[in-house]
Image 1 (cartoon, one colour):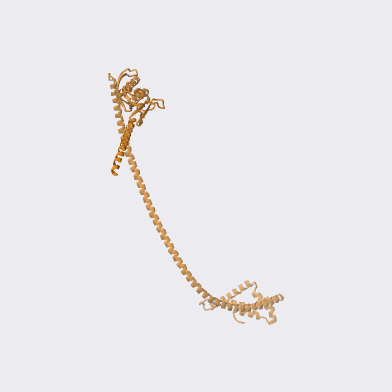
Image 2: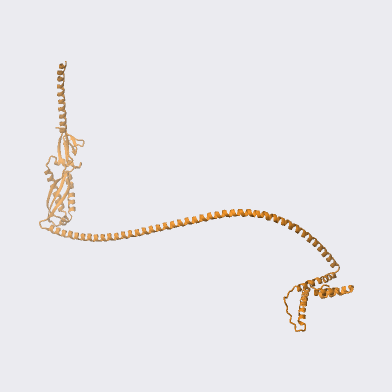
Length: 455
């Protein structure tokens, strides 16, 4: 049975391998065809695929730096290089400005096919399928024509002295022609400008001398400018150093001022703290003193209250005694005053009835008045009085008379106070009373009172 199976597998494997091989061959063939159909362009070249009309009306399409599928037989691929082409220039032409001097110009220009979509169709129409030498020839002839035209418009001095202007003028002159050709000028380099008569060489030497003089002048100016800049830099450096020194001094002064302010603030804070401490100590001492004083006052008040209680009790007792005594004295004085008032009233009534009774009363009072006056003289202490007598007794008599004189002066003072004449009053009363009682009684009493003796 197994043997019968082997031929079956072999028979089926052969056709499968053949089919796979065919498929593989077809795949490789398709890949090769695709590679043949796809065209890849470089960034430095322009691919022109012609044979099929495009939407813009052209019978070709352009690819730069990309790939495209080209249908064999129906489409064709051409290439135009976009690299620079060097074109040597040599032109002999007569200069303008009335000089009509033949000028020979040598130079090199770099041109290429333009990739501008508006300009490149012109290049495709003119140079597609043409060799590079043809492009270089056309570009050279166009540039040389432009050079001749510009040389004919410029004087030799301008061409020699300002070549940049000369080149810019040439490029403007041929720019329209180059657009029509589909070309682009990258640069134009004028290498040499001369003439057969060495006129331009003399101009060049003059220009060179002027350039050298200008260079020397510029160098001198640069040197002077450098010296000036160096002086300015030195001055700026000195000024900056002075400013830095001033800033440093200012910063140092500010720092010193801040330090001094900090020190003063610290001292002030310390002084304030000491002052607060002294104030607090004083307040504590005052509070302690107040407490002590309050304690002392409390003790004093207690003692005072105790003493006051004792004194008050004593004072109340003394007051009661004094009040009782005063009430007794007042009653006695009141009664005596009432008696005196009654007596005075009776005397007044008697005087009103008998006007001479006042004089009699005064005479009756005279002995007592004279006695009192004599008592005043008696009390005068003269100390030890030494009387010098010549032997006839006049000194003693003078002393006695002096005492009597003092008494007489006292009586005169009494008369001036009472406003009456005591002698006249006495005689008048004696004359009225003497006849009734034998007379002489009042005079005797008055005389006795004057001598200080009892009647």
